[in-house]
Amino acid sequence: DEVLGDLQPVIEELGSSNSASRRHAAERVRRLAKSSTRISMTLVKMGAITPLIAMLDASANDKGVQHTALLALLSLAIGTNVNKAAIVTAGAVPKMVKLSQESGGTVQEGLAAVFLSLSALDVNKPVIGHSGAVPALINILKQGASLKAKKDALKALCNLSIFHGNVKVIVDANIIQSLLDMIYHPELVETAVDLLGNLAATEVGRRAIVDKQDAVLILVDVLGWADAPQCQEKAVSVLMTMAYRSRALRQAISRCGAVSALLELSILGSSLAQKVAAWILDCLKQD
Image (cartoon, rainbow, N blue to C red; front, top):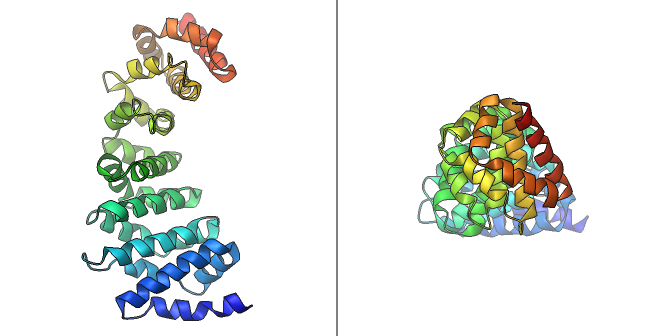
């Protein structure tokens, strides 16, 4: 295969002592990996990952090399779980965490995108969550130079929260108030509520949410967003999780004036929202 025959020189160039040559090779890896999953997997088998990770250690004045290496790793990760696992196993995450502490702008955007892709694989979630990535992602979420970086960081955190062993790490990083604030950001609200829902599925997550004075009130407020039915569904689902787990939480929901909002949602909401709202109302009546 003529294309596959061209790959060995690319791998060799990744290990060049010349920065411009390494960057050129990383760009070629990015393009080749995007062109075919078979080529992407072959590049990994031939050893592309290790030199790309090494490029993340480039000097602070060579952000172009770092960004290009991140984009190459992203292209290798997309579309193949084998490559996602291989990138994490090869030690990319600690390098990415270190890089996040030293960088901004396009490098942060690249980091968020790679973390998002890698965190989609279940076997990677515990490793990423306990490698210092959570504070790095929260920093991008709060300080990210672009909306895309913020969205990718938030989605990556949402992926990580699916593994319950990561919830305490996420909660301990003081993210709850930021998530509540993001509920009023039109581009971030759905993922923010998804993440709250994942956290609420655990005891430590529920406690952290309820400890924020306005948390339940904000979620109840979302129930009235008739022009955002998906947000209503997500918010009422979080409240359902909380109501199911604790009588004290059901009482907190009632005190926030949720009954009228739930009644309205049970009549005028989407099919799913109606069912969930009716279930919560039934729970509240039993108390």
